[in-house]
Image (cartoon, rainbow, N blue to C red; front, side, top):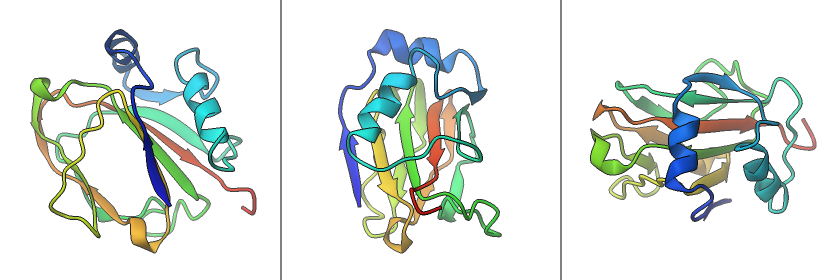
Length: 143
């Protein structure tokens, strides 16, 4: 399962969120409505160890599942992400799923979410510029 909700943030809201890189709270005024939208669609649990953060990672991420390369996030069932930077502010930085490695997603102000199952292995290409993304990692109801 994977899906996208378009236009969950305005450019102004995305700019406000990208001002602080690091761990964030699911209850923050700009994040809580996104969590509510997700809850309407998937059975997410926000209690720890679930977390969210704004990240800037110019080197990108190699192919992976969000359970972590050593299984250190084995609890992670669902992931959601929203790019907070308009594409003209960076080059590269495409988000790809393994089953469609030619199609880059930049999902600026859109919320992409997926079940972190085998079919949702993904990568993020390296970039230049200031690409920032809100990432949310959730437990599922059986975890």
